[in-house]
Length: 436
Image (cartoon, rainbow, N blue to C red; front, side, top):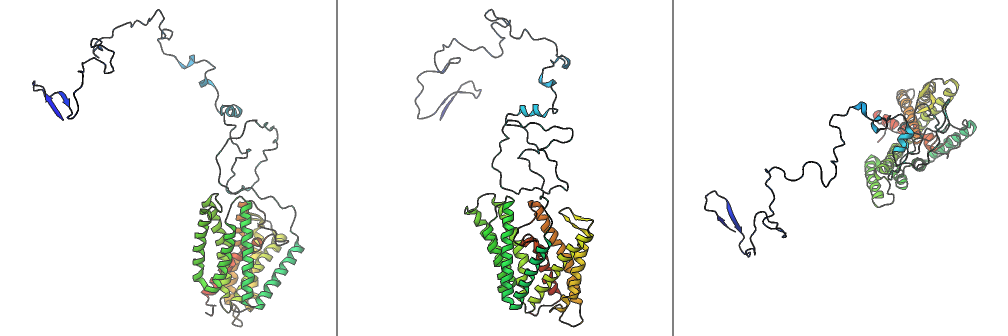
């Protein structure tokens, strides 16, 4: 690049030339358009020159378009009544609905309304029928507000009240049949007890995952059922060290389940509920397999079952006879009197019956271990019962299933036992009742 400076010494550049390029054919003159068509005489006026031309507001005989405006300020009192700023806001829902082109506003009466996580203690008003002194608004013909695809979730409605009371005769027959089946398995041996417990846990897990699907979730039910059965068998065959391995594999295969497209909807949500079902039913239930690894495990498992049966029976009988005070909003049918009665019967079952069974009654006249177990079960069983009631209420269900006549589902019958199993296991551990 070559530059030629002027001789004035002011440091300005007169010309800039790039080497290798031909010189321009013509010279550029100030005031001339580079696009041609203009003459050097058509120069623009200097920016500091006064404006020239017609500035009087008249052009071509027309009037000034701004002449109709007032010179003075305009006050708010002069605003016309039909101006939009003078219209009422927020008083007329129909007017607001007309304003939106997409449809009426979403209210609690529309299908898009999402109720709270926990249903209220009192039922919501029925919007389909008019209240006293108030007529029901006619449905609008506008289409509901369009929304994007929504991940499947639970229909958290308040559970419908039961159509009738529990059939006590059928409940007693079913309970006696389950008890006889358990005693027969315990009598045959440990392998039969493990098989029975595994079958019951698998059925309970299937029931739980089906309840989740009825509520709108899409768990990996097959994977969850297999994991629940594997947890109990692995705990029995390979002891406590196998439980973390099965849980880790369950997490990995649950992620693969949704990654490969077997189920595609809301993977994070549905992986979570799948793992919760495995932990709730499988992990807590696997403590039965852990107890059965010990030569005295059959007696430990029988003690847990008997104390739980005592709690359920005592709570039902005392609650029906003397129940007056509601216990919790998550289970409106349970009463404080029933809770106290169930805990008392569970404790009495531990001292009077379990105290005669090895290992809790291995020393004649020593009821210390049975006494401690009675206290532990009396605290753990109500927690398991209430937690399952909370889950059913959140899912909008009265019973988890109908496989047991007079009782509902397996989860409805074994909800307290799921909490009692780990409580019994660790009580036996702390009291050094394991022979191994």
